Amino acid sequence: MRVCVVGGGLTGLVAALNLSGDNHVVVLEKGDSPGGCLSSYHRNGYWVERFYHHLFSGDSRLLSLLNELGIDDRLEWLRGTTGYYVQGRIHPLTTPMEILRYPYLSLADKARLALLTLQARRLDTDALDRVPAAEFIRTRLGDSLYNSFFEPLLRSKFGDRSEEVSAAWLVSRIAIRSNRGAGGERLGYLKGGFHLLVERLMEAAGEKGCEVRLSTPARRPERHNGRWRVNKETFDAVLCTIPPGGTGTGGAMDVPYQGAACMTIGLDRDVTGGVYWLNMKDPAPYGAVVSHTNFAPVEWYGEHLVYLASYFNRTLPPDYGEKMLSDFCQRFGVPAPAIHWHALAVEPLAGPVFTTGYREHIPDYGRAGCYRAGMFSLPNYPERSMEGSVTAGIQVAALIREEAA
Image (cartoon, rainbow, N blue to C red; front, side, top):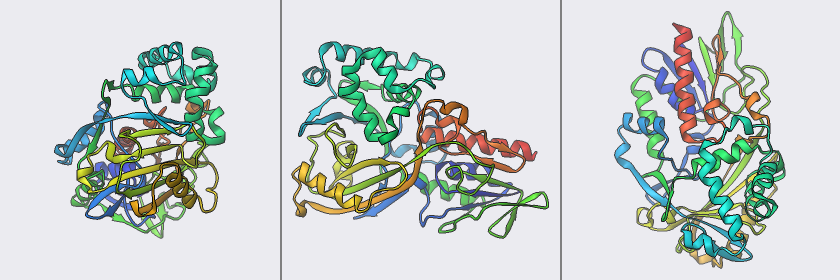
């Protein structure tokens, strides 16, 4: 069977690996490098992701894939610290003492927040799918905690759609990040970067006869004599892993998407006081400063690495990268000579927005030779992750095999 996989991101490469061997699989990737949002820069002898990534201890299928590919020995379990930037100051919020000292929440608010964190894994996210996150927090925890803590987070991640986001997403987000000790959140990272995962997926699929064609956009698939034609080639099945509507496979799907703009900066110093993930409460052209080398050891890179993370709807304003960099340097007191390099990655369709009622719009994997899977699939609800994308790739490949048989 000939199978065309549209999109060389994580779901597409995992599906291609699982379909290759007894099938002829062709992956069409419009970009000049594989991995999609997991693609990387090569700088000064090392690789680093264009968009920050880490994995969680409960990511069983992703961990199994690392083992299958023979790179599980590169996995390091590290500690991710957090903080808030408020009124020009960095406030670490990792240890119990740091949380107690945080001046913008009352003791009662902190107790309510701690209780929600403990309860998050037991809450029914399906029941919360139609409940706005803002309403859930205000009702359960009060206006003060919403305005001081949650509203800036929702606004920085979803912009003018923050009021539409469901409590299912928020609770899932809290639950997946609740694996914390006194020293911070336990998170996984590959020494050498997730470039190793993409590279090994490509190699393993290639060893089984899979073709990956970079810089090759897919034209709209057409039905032809009971088969599918893509870019003038004929296939028995087509799997679309790019955002809904990108090629027209399977008809229109009402899944809202947003874009991401992520600036990576190499510099000669730490600017966030040892904090890995610094959320911005003060208005800024980015919602978080993610100091990668306050998570992964700076010795791996020979310089400090920082991400400036921003999300947008529709289009990115002009000169946005320059505005991000200028604000960062001014706000954190970074002189121009301290910056070794910087690069802006922009993905207009970076991921779904989990609005209220999202659950009923999740498309199935398709059938009869026309399939779809990716960040919009059920395993990535109500919070997208590498684990969800790997699972979607495995499941859709199994379905394609089953229907072919």
